[in-house]
Image (cartoon, rainbow, N blue to C red; front, side, top):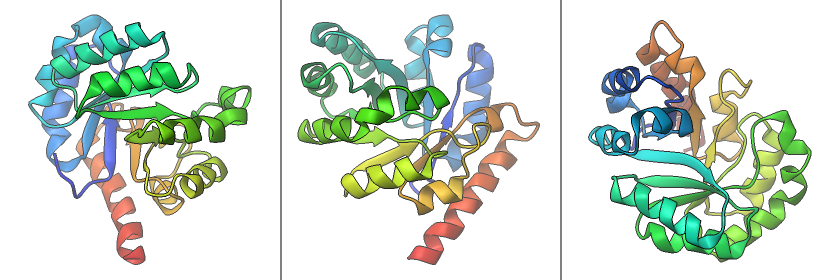
Length: 218
């Protein structure tokens, strides 16, 4: 994987062989791979270590439990080679702190807003409170939507220096260049890549769009 890319690819697949094949094809041109429950439930936690042979693996488990359970889940990810883990923040500072403590050097990213319309019903009304709490707990970064630029800018302005990962790119309507321009550090795309007839070509297209923004601002 490369630090020259701002792209994280979400392998939201249920076929381990397909996930591994895609990782082999694209890993040299992306920043990280993100996996979620659909793949883990089929392949088991060993898939984390297999994929980590290609580089950074972020486990998007959106942990939302009591501190002890959060700690156990996080430890399993860490022991199997995870580079990062995603947790919900709404369960409170004690649950969040348990994830951070168990993670050690592994990156922890807290969800403070989501990329689907339902986020407006509950989470978005407390996004700034969740962000403030996460920052007090010394979080590595947060998840903020790349398809809601108003919310993304709010989170960027309040979270100076904080790493922001943005889903909602591609199928959910987010534009990668716009997300970077409005405060995202890394964009997350899944279906637009793994459902493409040319996944590597789609990766390169996103990388090119993001690079044009970075070069203009530097």
